[in-house]
Image (cartoon, rainbow, N blue to C red; front, side, top):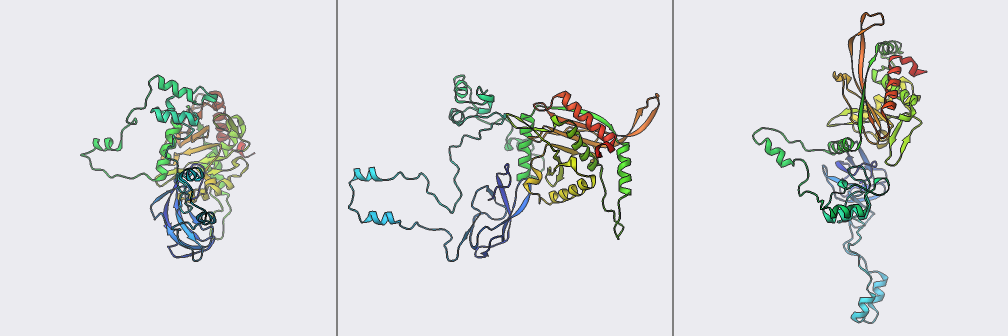
Length: 433
């Protein structure tokens, strides 16, 4: 099972192109896999005969697991016994050793035989990842002591460099009598189902995408100190510019326009320009440092079946509206078909979530780690506002909410970024020059 991105840990086999006994050449598609983000075909890297399939359609394999075996011409699917080595043959001709000599001469045996036909085994005594749920880091010894002592390492305050949890922190917690509760916090599936014993319902099993979304959103809300800034924008000029640009689009022989710009295309361009105007906010959190970027790589949330993806428009500040529109249309089409490559939805400096087309007026979005900002865009509406001379007029108004990671973006910096975005939206021509 190949590694498809740093955050991908497993994949589900959705289709086999070859059967056991088929001849295989390098580049032939073997099977199709589905991860939490995308689906793709996996080609063969060597020639031979497909002699074994370890994971059928619908089964999930961890990254690194042996999904199938390709053997060369006439080779067995898996060796039943190792051939006797020359050293073993030589030793059979030597005189027998005494028990003491055998004990001294015998090499140390492996605790687990090395079998090239099966995946590498994960150590059974695994005390968890170095990065804890709280966002802090921990040393291997600290995790082992916590595991053996029944302590949740994320509940321990670290005294090491950058708040790292070290052995003496765990020992101090052990001395204080801290222990993990026998049952995890929250309700189990059985407890929740018991509440609805007399209510008809359908159980929907979680797929990889929904599991990953749940895990990342919990991580984001628990580890990122969110704060929110909201502004109302006058989009009359933006709407007029969009209509004028679409009306001027050249048409082909069938009368179809060469492009059709959406409000979202203008929003992407304006957000990219705002990040260039306030470069200190064009950054992400990297645990012990902040990364600031020269270009505005903008992720755009796209709703798909059972979840969402965030394809990234690279260097959006340097692209024309027609380029952004064409690229966004292509990314949306392939995202909904789950055909995006990992490099097309990973990374980025910030993100946009637009629910205006669903009639949503205003909402707050959750930051996608390691981003430090995400802007939530509501729908345009007709709103009465007071004019400078004391009169009243109606304008097209749109509410946006900026979510900020306070570790990277302070209140004043976030306000500057939102003000820059407001300026580019209300005077859209300034984002194009």
